[in-house]
Image 1 (cartoon, rainbow, N blue to C red):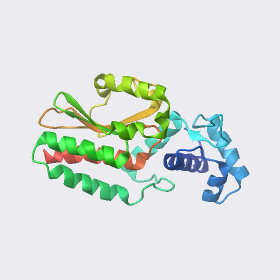
Image 2: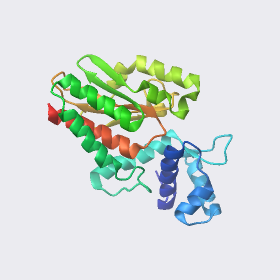
Image 3: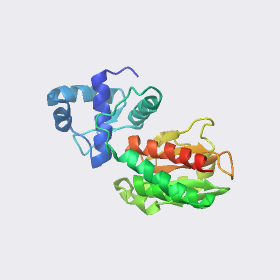
Length: 245
């Protein structure tokens, strides 16, 4: 997508700020962050809105990311793992990902049984991300953290909860949409094969287990989340589980 470097950094800042405060991000906040005038930020935000990367809720002067904006950001994160060129503007939770990954590894490797290891990994993903953790144990799907997911402000609306419930009822065919040979698959909002309007993202990793070469572990959460940390945790959870077995 053809946007300037400053527009890209403003987009990333909106995504990261919105993940933290769960409120539309205004030009004053961004002007302080980038040390430019509010008018300059508003002009750049207008261009991002024209590009379909951010939107303005009716009740606020601030902006929130669109699914397309999140996709642009997530693709940049993916490129980071390949060439280390991308740096989020603030790296929400800086320092926490490595500690959490280490804790995840310790928890998994302390389990003697395969199913306990997968359950422990799913439970910990739910705990660390505040999302719904999920994993496959043989032909069964193990879920953890439903109450954590529905405690997020996005799910104050009952229609959103119904959309997520419908999605969970049809999760098995959804998992089959995951592309083979890739360590991480991410479905954002309307990209989801099911529950397109439920406002959630599915981040899953495929791994080989004694049960299947196509085992899954991941999280389901609102599109508004800390993708830097969540993607890292899910990717590493799959790798740690595969190595443990």
